[in-house]
Length: 355
Image (cartoon, rainbow, N blue to C red; front, side, top):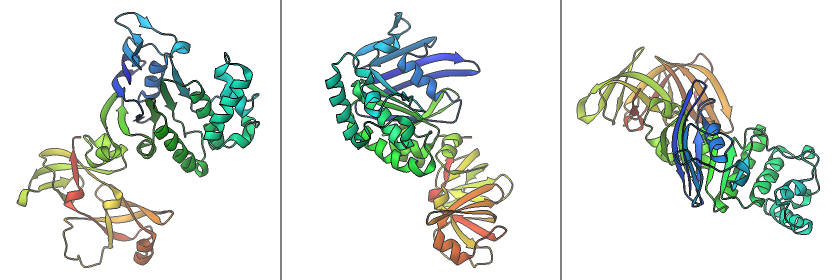
């Protein structure tokens, strides 16, 4: 197991975290730039000494500021994958993978390196140099090099950020497969919640140096504890004032006009969250059909963006909205910028969270 505790001030940032990662588990630490994500990795790796901290891995203590223990980075059995992969440009792929095995006879080093490259589907490119490899291929070499040391902990710093959009999806699938196979605890940081959800068994959302919520991706999406977490997971976040309504529902008067209903309980100022794919769109002139949908907000279409067979709509209502519908629905509705529509969603899809 990996345990990291750190309390320290880094300029204006007050870092205060405590994380546990089980063997074979990947914890994805997700948050905006400057939230302290990479600093947590650096503490675990021994590249940053906090004012107060503890790092334990596999029964070993790597850092304990109260007892004066601070194992140097080179003696910590951790594999660190940097954002840009940090491959040696003058070495071939197999030589990069074999580099951490300098104490092993050359033939054994080569055999082990080729075996790891084969595991990542890279054996045929063993003699290629990094400049000739694609972003996804360089990532696989970097991962193979890290695993060559048989690390007790795997640390990954924004492992997909250096990839272009075309290769990111495939590389993410490959990385997810690798993380499922390794038995060591893995701590990964990213600024993208979708990436964290794909790669992490659990996700910790970090902001301003503190982990403000931790759980499985579905738990965070279904029950965010704050407006920040809701917004970070991709929800539309509106603000308003809640009061008890009929039938055990909560009525929320939205700031700027309009009102919505939620099955959650709330009273006073709240943030309302709903995911874009929960929102249905109808022409403003259409008769409202009977059904269970409680919430209906008038809006103007600001943008229509096609993403594969889906369409994401930017909407101007009492507060900004976004909806995701199928391309077929968008074509049938004839949606374009300036169109007047009704955005509708159910009370059961409406979460109330703290502001």
